[in-house]
Amino acid sequence: MKSLQVGTYEIFWLNGGAFELDGGTMFGPVPKIIWSKRYPVDQENYIRLVATPLLIKGPGVTILIESGIGNKLTDKQRKIFRIQQEWDLPAELSSLGIDRQDIDTVILTHGDWDHASGIVMHNQEEKPELTFANARHYLQRSEWDDIRRPNTRAASSYWPHNFDLLAESDNLILVDDEVIVAPGITLCRTGGHTRGHQAIKIDSEGQRAIHMGDLMPTHAHLNPLWVMAYDNYPLEVIDRKRELTKWAVNAEAWVLFYHNPFLSACCFSPEGTITKQWPPAADT
Image (cartoon, rainbow, N blue to C red; front, side):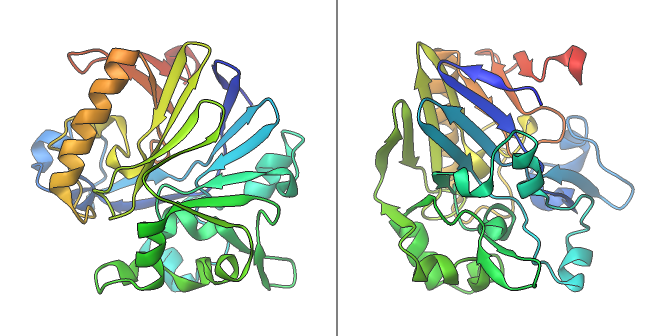
């Protein structure tokens, strides 16, 4: 499994499942005749998405960003979300010589099911347990407040069984706005997609990367005005994506993706073209 090197950190993308959603919801107000030129869509208007947790290995730290779709979906949910590939995070980690108990930090950009369902897994006895029992789990406090007391819109995506065991444990770390979780790795609240959505910046030995979560789910969402129907605060998405994209371009930073099945990371020029990608085009 190849990794992207950012300073002292290695970044791996792991299989956390794959699914399909309606393309119109993923591109919101953008006409299909425009977005379909940049992202493939099938005859039923569905597009393929992945859920690839990012493993970050560095001196003294083993960090996981996002957790995949988990192994707790019901048959009805599997049908609704058109599951194409199963979650297999423990096996993915094992292939790298890492046990799930070795993960010391888990970061969730937000609490939606496709990012957080891997936090609690069913064991061989079909009983729930924390997947990463030794890890600190970082969330913005405002996000956690909404997870535990969701409004009508959010309730369909914040599933209590993904968080109940975490709430009962000592593993939950709630933060406000900006915090450094490891040398050069900073969390910052963005809002937009959800009220407490957060991004992750990496700055190590003069090299930089950023994971914007669902502010930029795929490379096709670069345009700040291309927001999703799933975004709770679209005007915030526009402002924050414009700000963070400008930072990424000026810093020549890698933009890291979680949902993108075509490339895991890329760098953008000021004009919005992809200047380099990971994996390199020859490897895809």
